[in-house]
Image (spheres, rainbow, N blue to C red):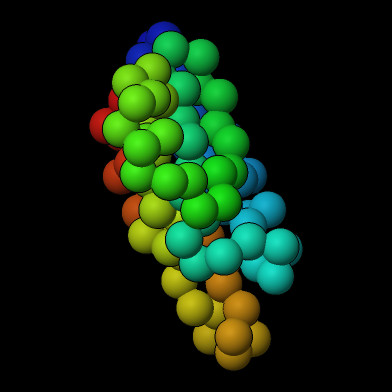
Length: 94
């Protein structure tokens, strides 16, 4: 497996873990939560309601709205599940 493919798979795994953490604990976060991705280390964290100034000043990280990476869970109304296609598309950008 190529280094780029390994990197992509690792980032996809990390994004999925963070999105699943959000989905399992959605009461702990607002719908304005964002993923904070460090492109150099592939570290992925959840930032709950980061302000625009923080995002604009932080040139080392990328911020992505978590709500863009979830779907409604058809089996459990009101719950979220990871959108694997959206996550794969995001990871492919790196």
